[in-house]
Figure 1 (spheres, rainbow, N blue to C red):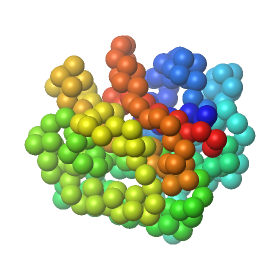
Figure 2 (tube, one colour):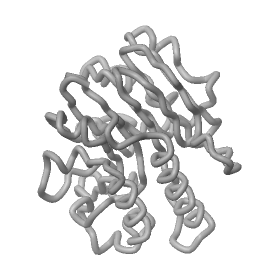
Figure 3 (tube, rainbow, N blue to C red):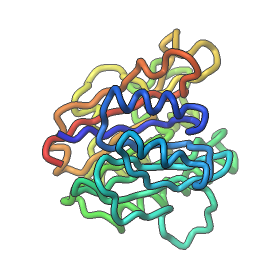
Figure 4 (cartoon, rainbow, N blue to C red):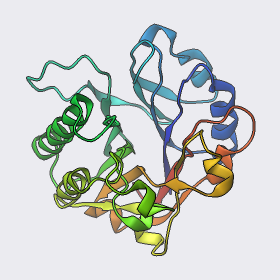
Length: 258
């Protein structure tokens, strides 16, 4: 069995100790990270290597930044979407490991609906759709992991009415994520959880976490060959607790014979 996780760490430097402790405890084989908030030369390659992982990193100072950590060899690393768009934001990195293609994704938040940031988010999601369509075949093992900044349905939102029409729940953003999934990608959480929740993000403000006011915006989407072998998926909610947590919790999927 291979255990794959995705986690918006919200600053690798601020939460390195916590990340390492979680990895030693949870023992994932692959970890996709988002929002590193550090350039490549400030990424803790040595500390990650000391616990047995190789890193593929696409960093950026202050904002964004994504990485893939693997217990096995990493090949075919691609930073960015490798398209013609001029985009200096470090939001996607892909690589091959354990016989599969893994992509770590940090989609734009979107700011406010109707803003320039919202337009950028929609354009970026269109680019992601084209990237996936051009790069991968639906019959090959692929994992799309990360913070998509979209809650797919109302059951992914603790308070749907309050978040209705927000950048995280807007019908246009949801439609773009759905279009991507219709290329043959399955939501691993929904393979195993059919009721309301679980949630992966809670705002730091308004006591959102203790009140349970969460949204599920972090996803592990897999191609059909891996969906057929996905034996479990969950959100490690406990990692949102304690001292200086990220506002996101890790999402984990378990796949047999990756």
